[in-house]
Image (cartoon, rainbow, N blue to C red):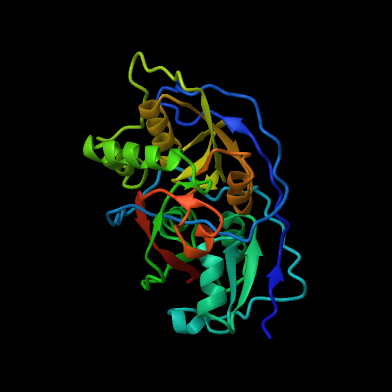
Length: 317
């Protein structure tokens, strides 16, 4: 019987920050009051998607993206150790110790597709990558775009050529929410006017001719506030830049809010708390590079996909 390894406890910190600052630092979404903390876990995951495949090659990001404390301590792994495997293909991971972020599609993939492997669970993908570098796990399975950032920023690791899954990210809302149709209409508008693809070019492809989203002059939000639940440790989709949460998802959410006449306020929390927060009404929607999956649809509705991604394996070389 496979023994699941839990390396760190997931701590939830719920914060409200500006959604998408422009390059000059001017903010178009104001800080608003916090909602009640969500401290229960829902065994869901996180990941990525849209209607067209984005193969953004991030060969030379400007800054390191390990999302880590500088002094990475050896983790309490319950006496389990990396098998010291040299992994060059998925077949080599059959009995490996594999780092995954709690509640993500990567975790589900290990449990369903690699039943003889041991999943080592971490609250953040960055923690799993640092454990890999430290030799504490044999591989990490994570979404493709964050994987590229981690590999570009850290020596000694690489991404296997095999694509493990193909998936779409969507926006999670309560079952029956009237916002679902409204969000889908807004996404259609942002496709038609090219803003969605501009944001992909900026955040995913790092295209110098693309730009962050900035609310048009005179934009008003007469309909009030919508609270977005996210996990801001998932560059380039959502991450901290100083005290602001930025990335593709915050910018896209802000653009949707402007179309619908709502101010967007972001609350940062553990990834596996996002769907619970939406279910419980603690947040109006969840947006965190979250894959549309049947198991999640039992708890929430999703919009149409807005980004097509995949799961990949990071290994040492």
